[in-house]
Image (cartoon, rainbow, N blue to C red; front, side, top):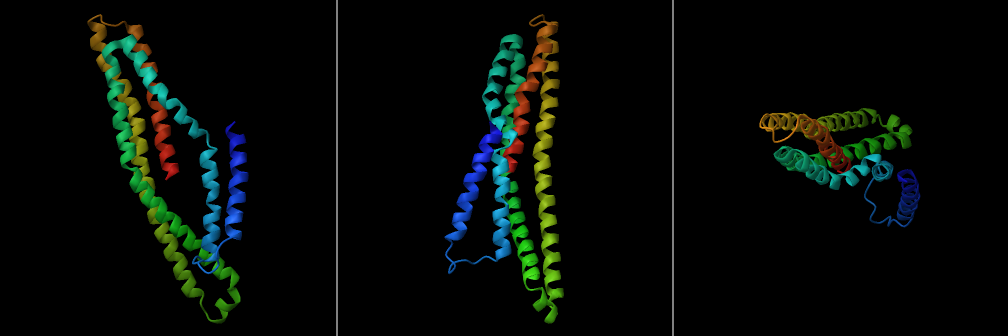
Amino acid sequence: FIDKAGKKADSRMSRLIFNQLMNMNLATKNEKSGALASTVREFESVRDFFSSASLVALIDTPFMFLFIGVIAMIGGYVALVPLLIVPLVIIVAASVQPLIKRYSTQSAGHQKGKMGTLLELLNNIETVRTVAGGGFLEKRWDETIEDNSNTLIKGRTVNNIATTFSQSALQISSTGIVVVGVFLVSSQSISTGALIACVILSGRILSPLVQIGQLLTRLN
C-alpha cells in the first residue's frame, strides 16, 4: 500500500513541479539554473519520505500506551519505568530537531551552490578557459565542498546524540524493569514469569520511539 501511494504521490508531485516551472515568472527568477535544478532534484527525498516504511512507525505510537497498560496489569509498579522513560526520550528527540533543521537548511544551500557552480562551468566552459576563470570557479567549488562537509558533520553529530539516547533508553528501560521487578518478586507481589513478560513488552514500547526520532530527522 505504501508503494502504491508513493507511485501516486510521485506522479502528482512531478506534474505539479513541471507546471510550476512552466508558469514561473522569468522577471522574478533570481536563482541560477543549476541551483533550481538541485532544488527540483531534492523533491525525490520528499517522495521517499512519504513512501518510506518508517512512516508506519506512527501507527505503532498509540500502542505504546496500550503496552504500558498491559505491563501495569501484569507487573504493577514496574510500568512506572517505561512510563517515565517515554516522555524523556520524546523531549530529547524534540529538543534537537531545531538544530537538525538548521543544519539541513544550510546543507541544502551548499548543495544548490555546488550544483550552480558545476552547471556554470559546463555551460560556459569555453568562455571560462578563454578568460582563465577556472581558478575562480575551482576556489568557489572547494569552499562549497568544505562548508557542506562541516555542516554535514555537525548535523550527523546532533542526530547521533538523539539516536544513541533513544537506543540507550531501550537498555535503561529493560534494566530498570529488572531492578524494580526483583524487589517485587522478592516480596511476592509478582511472579518471575510476570517480570520476564514485562521485560519483553518493554521492548515493544520504546522501539517505535527510535523510529519516530529518525522520522523527525528525515522530515527536517
